[in-house]
Length: 288
Image (cartoon, rainbow, N blue to C red; front, side, top):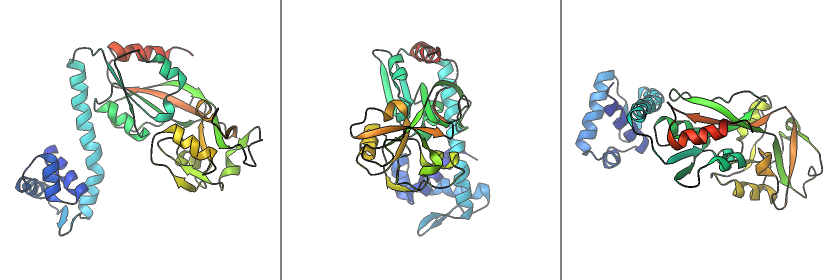
């Protein structure tokens, strides 16, 4: 399939409009219609209904393939450009908000850094496509176990830190005086659903056998301080690395004692590191 036609199809399907897709892509509406017709002829199946504009069953299936295919093409281009380019003195770091621990912040250069705090699922793609030089992903894992990083391109990952996790709750909460908590005992509690600021509830469910942890409030943002304020004022519990959960006004960080899991942070990069990227990676990979 012609990737240009595939890209046009994704825009039309996402925007549910030929005219809006033409505006976004900088094409004429006629050109967009021709792209879709050529792709449908190539595949021998209708991909979109026209009124309203929506994917057919075949079109829905193609969309499942299209995102990863286009991402791999962008990653391939970025990889070749990265090899041919001169070393850059600056550094763009894409990171999940909870991956920005004290050790990471201490490893950054004094100048020339662009920090992009992203939803954790978007960090590997940013590195693969060259919009970031380095990435930091994090999540729950058994001690020394690697994280599952999406297979978006040939990426290299290294563990750069592990720390205990704590449940953050108000200091007036009945469990606030406990010295430790078991995750299974909290499955029916009120939880904050903040997948890009805290540790996602899906990770908690996976650690608890796949059930429980229904959200009381959903926070769609990457600001850890906003999340901790919500937890401290009683809107729901959240699980965080110890460094992020301690010292919150009005809150108490109680260690999670069962199951035996840690907050793990991994460095993600593509190709061979040079310049500022290599210096930061070297500092992070040194034993703590």
